[in-house]
Each structure stands twice: as C-alpha cells, then as structure tokens.
Amino acid sequence: MSALPLLNHSMRDADQMLERALVQWGGDEDLWIFGYGSLIWRPEFDFSERRSAHVHGWHRALKMWSTINRGTPQVPGLVFGMLSGGSCQGMAFRIPRNQGDTVMRKLWLREMPNAVYDPRWLPCRTPHGAVKALAFTLSRQSPHHTGELAPDEYRRIFSEAQGIYGTTLDYAQATFDELQRLGIDDKALKRLLAYADFQQARCSALAAI
Image (cartoon, rainbow, N blue to C red):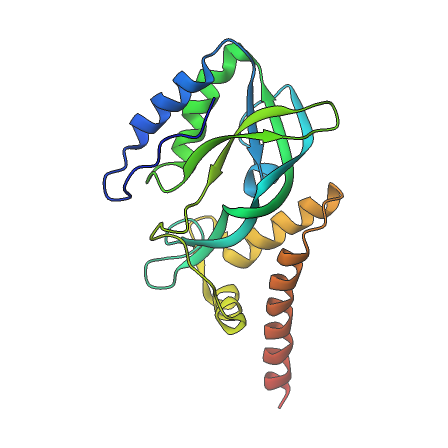
C-alpha cells in the first residue's frame, strides 16, 4: 500500500479516491485506521482492537478551516489535519477484514464529503508491532489549510466559531481531554487551549469593571 496520488483540489473526486483506497487495501487482511483527532473519541464504527500508535513524519495540527461542522462560511472554525513533519501519537483501530469495505465507505462519508484530505497508508508503531493504517492527511497547498495563525486569531476562533456539531473550542478540548486520558501529552494543543483560557479570563475581567 502506498500514498494515494494527490489530485488538484479543484478536480478531486471523493468516490474515485475511495475506490483507489479500497484497491490499495486489497481486502485480504484486516483494515487499520489511524485516528488523531475526533476519531479517537468518536470513531462511529465498530472495531475489534484499538492500539496506541506513533506515526513519524506527520503531526496533528489544528490548521484546517471548517465552515460546516465547527464553523460557518461567515465565521470559519477549525478542525484537525495531519501535516507533514514531526510525529504524531494517536490510536490505530483494527477492523475485521469482512467489515473493512463497509467501514471504509462509512468513514468516507464522514471524512471526505468534499475530498479535502489526502488519504495515505502510513506505517504506525504500536506496542504489539508495526501496522500500516489509513490516515487522513492535509496538504499545505490545500485551500483549507490555514497556514500560520496568530494567537489572537485562535482566541477569536475559540470564542466565536460554531458549526452544526458545536464549537471549535469544544472540539479541541474534547480531543485534548481524550488524549490526556490515554496518556498522550500534546504540548502544542495544550498551548492553543491556553489561548482560550486567556480570552475567557480577559472577558471575565472586563465584565467585572
């Protein structure tokens, strides 16, 4: 299995990318999915095993615009993407071979309605050996990639952005809480959430004046 060929963002076809991923998986072995964001605390699929997993060469980043789930076109929110560089600690889910096709198609409806992500098969180190798992990565060339955001921008997004599934802040906090529960220390995410704490403290101080 290898990375899916990347397509021009204006010409991406989610169904075509799904079929290519299914062919690359092959269906002869159990399917592995790597979760690094909401898949960790809300997978929405049945699995037979879940392992702590480490991926080298990619990192979790709250740098993907969301205009439906965690924001709106008028007030965009943020969701996680996996950007190249660094490393990422997450969870690898094993799906029995006979359920792999069904789970993959269901997962595509959730993660790839607009074909934003670049699905890749990434090697994952786990306590019980290496596995190759499907992960949803994000290109820095994607129009959905935020680029670098200033602290004040994160503060504004955390205080204002809300979509059909709730706020960006709730989404980021839920991910952080589950990572903590699993013993995964994400210092970068902790720093971002501190911006929200600062904003809330400042608002409380202003309200008291």
